[in-house]
Amino acid sequence: MRELQVLIAFGGYVALLLWGVHMVQTGVQRAFGKTLGLWMGRAMGSSPRAFGTGLLITAAIQSSTATGLMITGFALDGLVPLVPGLAAMLGANVGTTLIVQALSFDPTALAPGLVLVGVWMFRHYEPGRARDLGRALIGLGLLLLALHQLVTLFEPLQNAPLLGSALQALAGSPVIALAVSAALTWASHSSVAVVVLIMSLAHHDLVSPELAYTLVLGANLGTAINPVLEGGGDGNPASRRVPMGNLGTRVAGCLLGMALLPWAGTIMAALGDASHGVANFHLLFNLVVAACFMPALQPYARLLQRLLPMRVDPHDPARPQYLDESAREVPAVALGQAAREALRLTDLLRESLQLTGQALLREDPRATSQARYLNGAISQLDRSVTTYLATQDQESLSADDEQYLKSILAFSMNIAYAADVSGMGLLGHAGKLHKKHWALDAEQQAELAEVLERLQRNLRQAAALLVSGDRATARALAFEKEHFRALESRAAERHLNRIKTGRLEVAEVGAFYLEILRDAGGVNACLVNAAAYPILDRHGELRPNRLRESE
Image 1 (spheres, rainbow, N blue to C red):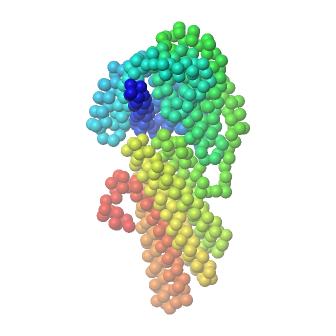
Image 2 (cartoon, rainbow, N blue to C red; image 1 turned 90 degrees about the horizontal axis):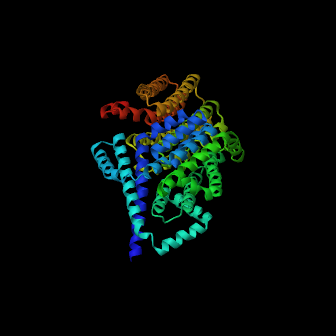
Image 3 (cartoon, rainbow, N blue to C red; image 1 turned 60 degrees about the horizontal axis):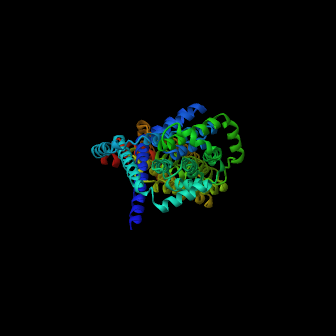
């Protein structure tokens, strides 16, 4: 019974430790996620700068996995070359050791104050950066309390026969010990938590220094497995270059570390007691790996490029290119990837509208089929974007992130609806026009060509608004609805005048042309709803009466 109580307590404190780490990570990411992402993208021009950037960002968010996801996204998009990306990962691995160094000095006395201040900030401030920092302080306090309780829990277990037998078995099989530690780190998604547990075991002399260092090697190996398994799920081998490169450095480092373990105990003993020795070994291991690989990153990157070539399928426009499932751990990266995918919808719609114009004005059946194919791809891609954003962890989103997510969803949905209106309306009219062998007159053709060109321009403005959020551009795009209404009104007046003058032979074609203009206006309305209205509404420029006037 006593053993069961201890086991439950151990599991609870480990869970509290993991939850504390999670709160620190999500709190910092929500407070500074976008800023850190932008800073990273700008600061990784060279390998030394990239190393320092990876170290500082990981020290802030305490997740080398999260940093790795940002680096992978930048590298895959071509914003960061592979060599600085790999250097940043080496820096990230060093950065994640800093909190372990801090925890090795047992700052448990700070825990109540951190929780107190964190709860006050979380309850006092509105959703925003201050509240997110309060969340991070609560997580740090819980982490320290969990660590203290684990240390206390291990004290009566020093003479427990079952635990002693298990640890003795691991001591006799270093490879198995390394694999067990790697598996625990992979399962917990936190090398910090596992290394802290190893420090507690070493503090109570439950493990020998050699076994403790073996377990630390396993933790470093396990933390590199998650990005490989969770990232690069798009089938493009190039998306795995950074995580696979990081795993390669971990494997090489572990092999070297295992070979030098017999001498590690003597070296670490001179640097501090058993608990500090674990933290120092963790730091020293990552520094040595970084020192060994930094000079060799150029040939290492060429090897990765050869083994993991870029593979792009240009024949499947419906296939997402940027929706990386592993990016969900970092909201700023996930939303950025979703926005890039949403902008791809505008590229596809632009091409579809060009083909639609050919179908209407040049009687091109092939253009009709190609436009319908692209419209179907837009619909599928919109569903992918919607699913990706709908399944994003809402808890990790800041207020700004939530607003940005809603903007991307609205944009994607309305662009897809514009494709539906174009497909069912304009393409349907093109088929009917050619089936009945009708012909638009020169004035109608010139006007329709101008309308289609205006739709292309408005589509470009909508895409720019998703990125810039400029209010003046939003107002200009919103007023485009008035232009299309005026255009339709003039066309209707011309149609009535022709009927009054007795030109009944063109009445049917004229009425049909009005339907084409209405559907073109429907496509334009979708573009306005996609990009202009969300911005104007956010700034209070779409009051109910103003909204009715705009409709």
